[in-house]
Amino acid sequence: MKLNSIFLLISLSLSAPTFSADSNGKFSVKGAGKRSCENFIKASNTKGTDYYLYGGWLEGYLSSYNQFQEKNFDISPWQTTELMLALLKKQCSSHPDTKFLSAVNSLIKTLFPIRLNSESNLVKIQVGKSESYYYQEIIQRAKKRLQKLGYIKGQLQSGFTKNDALAFEKFQKAIGLPATGIPDQRTLLSLFIKTTSK
Image (cartoon, rainbow, N blue to C red):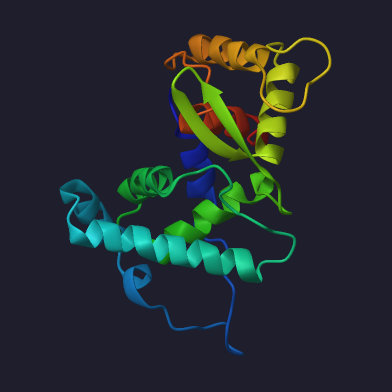
C-alpha cells in the first residue's frame, strides 16, 4: 500500500505554527528534537542507540502534547511508535534540513483530525492466535469507515465480531495488504488517512 497521501499532508504542513513559550514565541528544545531530519535518517538507517533515543523523545513529546492540548486524549490512539518513526523517516527524507521537532509537529497536525479526543475503553481483539488491544472508539470509527465503503452491511454491532474480521479481511485484500482480518497499523492508516484526506 502506498502512503503518499499522508506524506503529502505532512509536507504541506511543515510550516505549521507550534506552541509558544515566551512573548516572542520562542522556547528551548531539548534532546533529539533540536537535531536535523538528516541526523534522524542516519540513526534510523543504523538502528543504533540514537534511533531509540528518537523513539523515546517522541513518546515523551506526544505524552506531553496529550496532557496540555485541549480536547485531546490521545493524538496517536492506534499508531505505534514504530509506525510514527517510519512516517517521520519518509517525511524527513524529503526535508533533510528540517529540525526533527518541526517534522513531529507537522505529523501531529496531520493526525489531529483523527485523534481520540476523550478517553475510551480498551477492547481485546482476537483473530485466530493473534490478539491485540485497541480503543473501543477507534474500532467503532474503523467499522463505520468499512460500512461506508460497503464492506459491512446493515447495522454496526458493538465489540468485534467474526463478521467484522471478515470485513477487515476483504478490505485488506482489496488494497493489497495481508488479509489477516486484524485492524493492524497499515489497515487503520489506510482507512483513516484516506477518509481525512478527502
